[in-house]
Image (tube, rainbow, N blue to C red; front, top):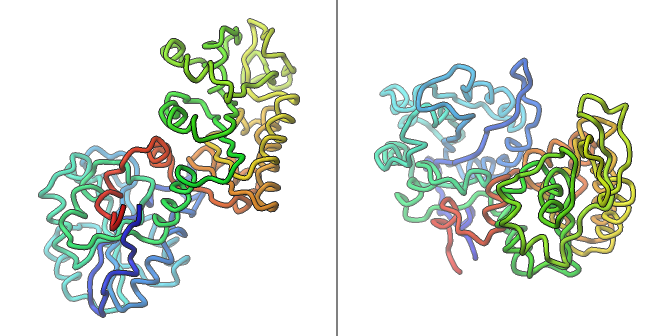
Length: 395
């Protein structure tokens, strides 16, 4: 699958380019941005467009407002950070479809850049409304999607909007994402290891089934492991289990490629890390809950990672925010970084995984840390993403 790149657009000075990005980024309780990776990921695309004398009109969403304005979801908070990173003035348009806004864009000159207010302040975005898409399309000569994290959504700015342009294209961030994940599906170097962690194994089951015949080993940890263990007939105390999935996971639970923890760090509750202890998977105490993979499992998982040529990792292997439950995830992260240095292709994705890398100070230590979560999983199911399909130039 080859996508049309922004570099293939015949941009001329004064051309206006709608650039769909994903600036739905984490903030702390004070409303301050805590991770600017998604902003930084769009810089090369925006700079390229500006360098051609064209005018980027950035469109994005923030959060889940239900078609009404919410001051705490305004993209205005992105402006200072974007200006600092881009070293360029950003014109923020709080009323995207007001006559004054249309006049400002129509009168714009080369070297100007605009950011429209949160698209989800308009109901038409979430409902993939064609009229809403046409209203956005009227602003521009070209469309570029640089928002991989939302490219699995059938929403107006992602799905309907590109169909209104003759040559919709992909930005550099989206191209990088598709390149890495396509390689993991079609041309992974062996041995190929997949690590499945996190709390919600239900989000990863389809990806796991799609990948099983392509990989050499699947290491399952985090809360995801407890559902698979139950499917294999083990008791797991009162650890987190998706009861609805137990009877549907026979193919995964029975696969010899799937490696489960042999021991865990368990405690009465997350709030009692001082009472944690190592417990064997085959004799899990009924009054405890698992919060991390144990030392024996950690050693085995690290060994698999260090012997691999390709590693894909979705989700932490424990409740890493608490130091007592962080060692499994930390040691496997170190192994990933070491494998990268030795030439392995190492990829991770999803908000929890990125937060874990930041906390451990390994953010830039892997081959690729995807800013996508749900989009990564959908892509790794072999599904065609609504935001990417219109950009395909050649299959």
